[in-house]
Structure formats: C-alpha cells, structure tokens
Length: 108
Image 1 (cartoon, rainbow, N blue to C red):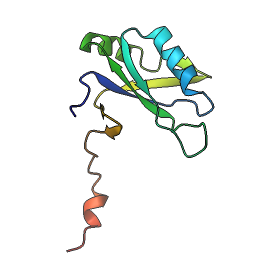
Image 2: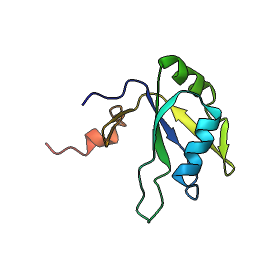
Image 3: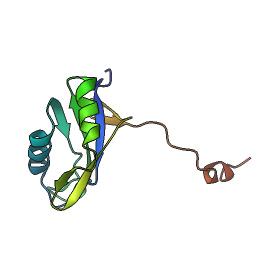
Image 4: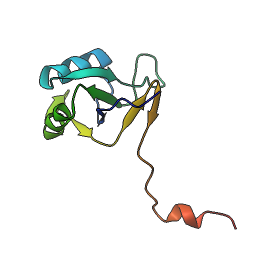
C-alpha cells in the first residue's frame, strides 16, 4: 500500500483529551482534513500523545503548518510537523538521526 500523499505528524496532544475532542478541535481550525488518527496508548481509553493528519492537497498542509503551535487544547499547543507518512495501520517515519553514540556501540 502506498503512503497517503499529504500526511503530517502532530505531537504534544494532552493525554487527558479524548481522540474525539482532539479531532473536533483540529477540524474546527484546519480545513481539508481527510483522515485523522491517534494511536491508542497502554491505558484503556488513552492515547500516546501524538497522531497523524491527512489532507486533500499540499496547499492545505502548508496552511496547517502555518498554525504550528497555534492550536491550543487543554492549555497545550499542538505541533504539526512534515516528514511523516501513514501506511495502512503502520506508521513510518523519516530515518532516525545518527547521533554518533549509536555507531560507538557497534561491536567489531
């Protein structure tokens, strides 16, 4: 399955906010959201504090990125980042950064 073409990552979602509450606030402030998901957390009814938004066009993504940190939910800003893709039920990210210490841990 191909990644959805216009997907962004959201973070800093308040843990006591329900997914329905987060979705309603995001859809109220951002137009063109096709798909919204927050992965469930370890506690029943909870979530992990991040999620994904898919848009109908790249122009809508740019408008959403302009609101980065401007959406407040329960006193916390929600941050919107590019570079994330959602494929089915798997979340694929950009490759992790090489911080240097990881290569020092390699065994010969």
